[in-house]
Image (cartoon, rainbow, N blue to C red; front, side, top):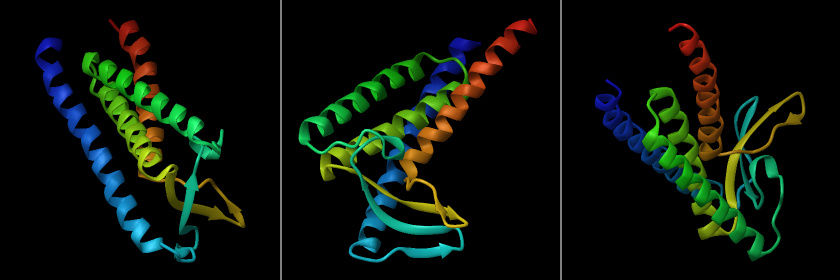
Length: 164
């Protein structure tokens, strides 16, 4: 049964990876045009649209001030995404394929920004009682949700094996 379902998961995984990339690009292009030279736009009492160029990794860590660092981060992201795609291709559970596709798609979306813009475009600024969380984008969200799916798959595997 695993052999018959693997191609379906592969197609699903590749489609989800491409969808993640497309949604990331569409939202970034739209918001880059909308926010170009603009002050933050208040969407709700807890969400603003802002324009932040992140030269580091998640949450603004490891900020890179030169091209060498940017190329290193970009190369690392692409290599990780390729490893995740191979892992996705070999995975036998839909949960793992979902997680891997989301993480790989998000990593490639942010790598694209680093190549084209020199930094990752972040827009979503959630805040509460004066505290602002880190600005993020669709690719960052996909990576975070994908890691959640991978954790779920990792915790389900031992439980499924114990139930046999």
